[in-house]
Length: 188
Image (tube, rainbow, N blue to C red; front, side, top):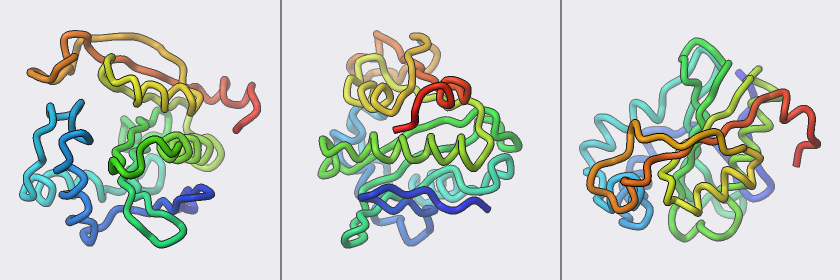
């Protein structure tokens, strides 16, 4: 198994059942959930029964987990989580990048820092060929993170826009970064 990714300010580690309370708290913040559920909290039962099995899954294609709890190096404070999950469980070809951080972690560059660490780790250690990331078109903060992490706008689309969420009428966007493009420019 590849060594866990990390950054100067954060430790990234596999999510465990011990993270349930942190995950429930994270998904209870209306601002965190704004572009995911229109601000509705995720019930604890859903976190335990549906989300936790997904967040703790091991992916044979990359030989490791697809979701990572982010903690401060300083004191181990839970910041949220990052997704770096293969679209095909048996292949490292394409991985999806995602992030969900506590509001207290916003505006500090932590999402970009974690995203860059995972991108570099995947290209260097896991034989990833493409990183893809998606968000609602109106989610300017998430789009900025994708761009700062080196991903390039690929397309807008309307396949999965959540109903009833303000801005859903503008659809979603996909950003990508291919291994060849990452190799061609100096890593940050």
